[in-house]
Length: 250
Ligand SMILES: Nc1ncnc2c1ncn2[C@@H]1O[C@H](COP(=O)(O)OP(=O)(O)OP(=O)(O)O)[C@@H](O)[C@H]1O
Image (cartoon, rainbow, N blue to C red):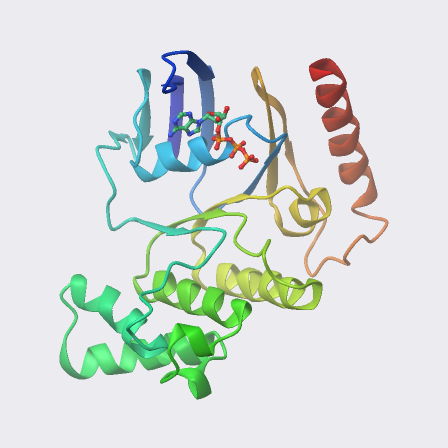
């Protein structure tokens, strides 16, 4: 569904120095896959999502969505960042409805879809609260409800739960798995947590300074046990690879 073909990407800093990020990255993401992306800080995880979303473009090579070059942000991709970016002057309901209105949804369908997705994320009672009256977890759930309501076929998630407390994070991870099992979106999920990647991923990609270091499937059946012994071999493989990468940097 998404293909990165010999993608080269670098950034020019203010002092004109060039930071190379990808030099010939090849990656294929199949429809319906939940792919977790791990890697040391600065290796290009966010850049990978931004390329898939059409927020930035490769210097050479191509990023393809169903065979066509990604030419800019489109309705097929929903993006969730680390901190929910909600309009503070709109309620939870207003934030979800606004996104739907942008897509031309009106009238009864607008009301029904907005309410349905807020309820799906457990926010029916908070629908008329403004973001400042919601907890961080609730704001993040509104952001996810907004993306899900748009029925994007691809979800690009950049450390979406990292600002949450441990309990909320686990709940949100399970909600994401429930949504994925229900709607089968293709998900690219950036995380710094080996345990989170092993718990969520169908497949884990470990990025390093020289591109993809590891690309492994997680074949453990769901529901998985958090840090269960079935996941240990995957976690250990990832940790060993990350350790090596950090050692090289030092
Ligand atoms: N807009 C930009 N302008 C200049 N340099 C950038 C820009 N965006 C990213 N970079 C640089 O590109 C490299 C990759 O950044 P990116 O944010 O993709 O990494 P990351 O793996 O997501 O990092 P982290 O885990 O810390 O979020 C970094 O060295 C970063 O400083």
